[in-house]
Image (cartoon, rainbow, N blue to C red; front, side, top):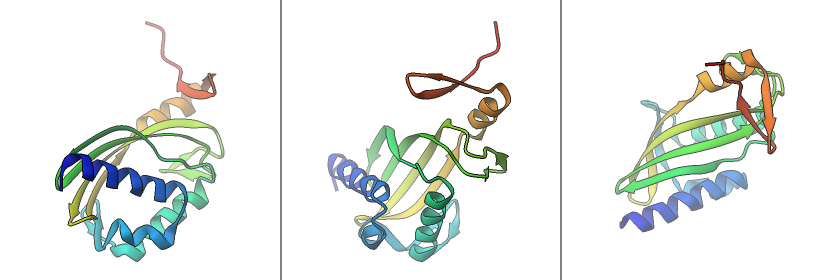
Length: 146
């Protein structure tokens, strides 16, 4: 598969997530998918995503950076949302936060087989500690004076 084809396939996958089209998820994700080294299979992957949308009702995946070198994709996903209750062990409780997730994928054929994901928890912690500063409808962490 060419890099442009893999990029297009990945963007279709992101659209599937944003539409919460769980019936179509198997078009993009392998039955034997692993997440962060743990085999969770397609049903577990779907359960994880459905839980994410329940806990973060305004969740939307925005691709900020995408690099495709078959069979791998590297992506930086940007989020601005209001997680309910505790998120990543942090008491977010519906506050609007902005953060990124760096994700690496390995495809087997045309399906995601391996996922390695790291969420920028420190960005959320900084916003919760400093309080949000809203600018152009986007929350940014307050920076300490220099």
